[in-house]
Image 1 (cartoon, helix red, strand yellow):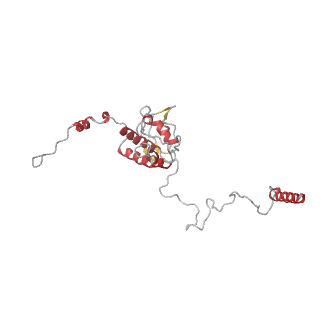
Image 2: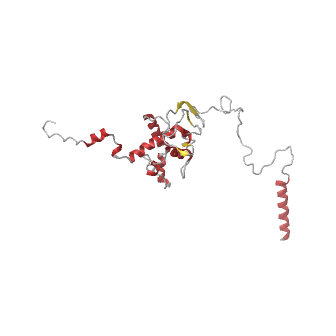
Image 3: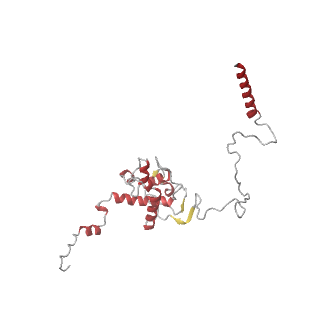
Length: 238
């Protein structure tokens, strides 16, 4: 029995020396890699030729319409200010300037106000971006009943709750940008002006859910208060 032990020990020592004993030594022969860990990959390097493409180039042009991360569109600028801070006009896109428009903060405090000229186009853009990025969890009305709730995500904040309605606009912007709790960050997916457009649309949703008669224009209230005209008697004049 003992001789088998020494035989196995001898074989083990030889195996260890064969695998690791010559590690680091210089040789003209290619090394034997037991675990290559993807050190050598069948890949092309930049600027190399390739027979796979008709033009013989390995590097390809981006897909038409591709927008690089960090891109700013010089044709769009902010032209209004928050209610408690003046915001200078600047390019829109994925900018990261330390101002209210890009951070939601004024100094160390959350700012309030939408730094965009609010119009129908902005609201439509906000509705579109909301339905693409937010409705899957929060639902189309912000009630927290999105489709993802049917697949196990039980805790979804209703955006129409009073707590969220009372949040400053800048704080909601920060949540969209950096995420919070189970919600991941969307700063790399949603451009800065689109984040503000989403907030503007969200405010409209909150206003619709929590609206009172005081939010209805006076002329509309007067029209609603008028009694409906009775239908004309059969055979009579209207």
